[in-house]
Amino acid sequence: MNKGWRDENHIRIIETEYLTHDVKRFRVTKPEGYQFAPGEATDMVINQPGWLGNRHAFTFTGLNEWPFLEFSIKIYKDHRGFTQKLDELKEGDELIIHDSFGAFHYHGEGTFIAGGAGVTPFIAIFRQLAKDGRTGNNRLIFSNRTSRDIILKEEFEAMLGANFINTLTREKSDPYHFGRIDQDFLKREISDFSQYFYICGQRKMMEELRNLLMEMGADEKKVIIEMDFSQQVLE
Image (cartoon, rainbow, N blue to C red; front, side, top):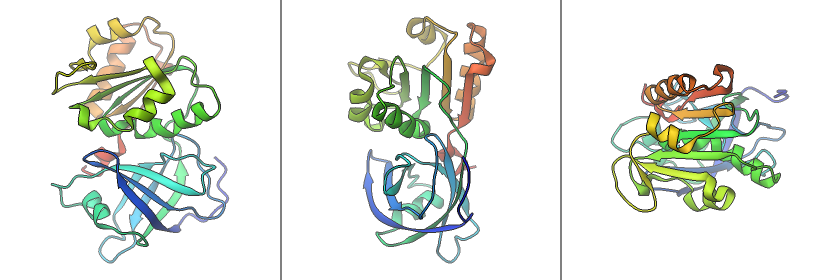
């Protein structure tokens, strides 16, 4: 997007809320003129002594037209690091964000495949499509360990209906699929491999799925991947 604002923007936390047991939503003030496209991210810094050199990328989960910015961030409580510090912040505490940058952009109807917190770039994309009445035949295949890990389950169901497909890897529970997203799963769930595929999750998962999809006939140029930024916090 065209950047017409300062590269460094000081923002304050408005409110926080846990969406699942380990994913927390942060709503923060929006700098005047700040813009981003659905699927884009920004680098974030905690504006406190000892943290100013610690920058991490997170995707926006709200829409550009909203009067505030929103992030949905996986909190690693057992890892003394950036997200644990974020979890300690209160209303009014200050963060610094930078320009937005392109992570995922919507290119056309297809199948979105997410692992855990890797769904966050897709939240704003689907919210924008739903607002514009353009969800169409887009599908979301969402892999989690257990049902308690599913982020925004009710909202995705409302936006996508039967095109919201969940699979769990550590819990057998109706009506969810059980198991990893492997070749058999893809054969069962996908009939058209000429469509776009958007994949976000851990690096190994994305590489395996990209290779599988291409073996099954997907166009390499239509397989769009981006690393789950929550993993970058730990790397």
